[in-house]
Image 1 (cartoon, chains in turn orange, purple, cyan, blue):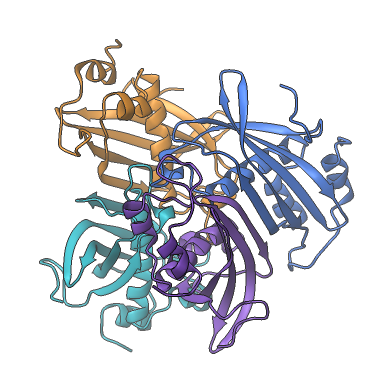
Image 2 (tube, rainbow over the protein chains, first blue to last red):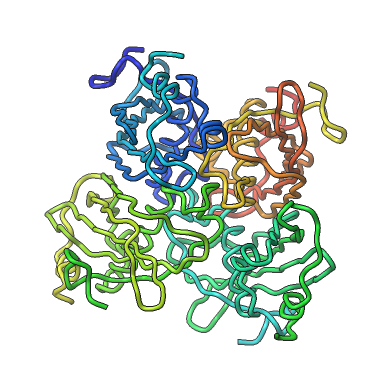
Length: 146
Length: 146
Length: 146
Length: 146
């Protein structure tokens, strides 16, 4: 699969099935649930870069709450659709982070984009004060391994 | 309003509107969301008895996780229906509590029952060990005020 | 209550309690759930203008799916907080509509803003094709009653 | 993996990660979300038996709403836990169906049970009237292939 225009090399894809509980009476995925899909995508993006968000919280005492979220809905997703959530880090600053997402319906080998958006995260310590991303975490997030 | 058969005198009713996000593609409230309605009902039941569940957690260090939940679905609820959630304490033991719920659609002054069920709760201290309900809380829950 | 700076006269407020199910392990309202709060706010905004969204769908065959949603998170909301969701129509075009939202925590008579955002909606007929907002609906939405 | 005591040979397992949005302020999976896990489990159970629930609705005009749901919570599940949802058909009658579920946390090769329950479903036609399960579907559900 080649990345969509605008998606950098370092994206990560997860697949998921649209469940009944994700849909609403219009027969399509309820708009708030795309943010849940985004979350599942970015957790696995971090894991693919060697960063467990759970361990970040437990071991480093770091939380990364969402300070802004945005989504554009291009086409509906329906029950039982096989969906691909693509995620990549589009900005990595001293004490913040932006993850971009694209959502596709997969049919056979074709991906058709149905939504795109981003979440911007503050990086906070256990007192919910802004803090710098630890150096080894930053190295992994920027794709320099570690 | 007279209580439904089987409902004791000490019930508490809340009203809520079915939102779009509560429904699923069948056009009715998704079955898991009734447990969310139950939660909203029992929080307000406790408050009506003079017990804030938030304060229980903060001041008494007590949590009351659900150890069993059950619901029977009698008829569908639809988007924008005005729903009444009725809640009462049906059992109050040393370190556990059962709350029963009934859910009605309200049309004009008529209530038609659409679901009923219960949640059973353990009473745990801050170490998640079973603990007795504090005496002043028990008095309130049993309707003896305080 | 005077409107916040930037909020026009024609806003509508609803109150709701943060439920346990709205929170996440950080102890605050999960970010996707603000979009559910927005939905509840805009449904009641429409109702306050004399427009039932349910009837729009049933009687006019019109759906207004979200084509873009955005939220900025300014401060956390916690379990049992009393929340005010403020909503107003900020743009009304031929076949689209934008609703802005602000979310406040209410303590006594004080409102402190915790989030703000918007949803943009397409106006579609029963075939999901763009369609003009019916004239009597438009009149109501623009606050000219009806 | 050998089936848990009481689980018949014909069970089906799915794996999923607990997401942030599944948890609540107690740091564990919110109780209503187990019913969402049950749904994902039983959809894949049906698929493993050669029955697509989506096609049942579309091609046969059949819906299978939940008429009763029950869950016992034995131990908490936490964020990022790897969870196994086990599902099997425990009763198959003329116009109804019962699916049992068990939820496990998987650590290495160990499964520890955290919840168990069931959903009972009516089988309805497109008019929401009870109807017999079509013979070819029944054959698949009873494990006789087709």
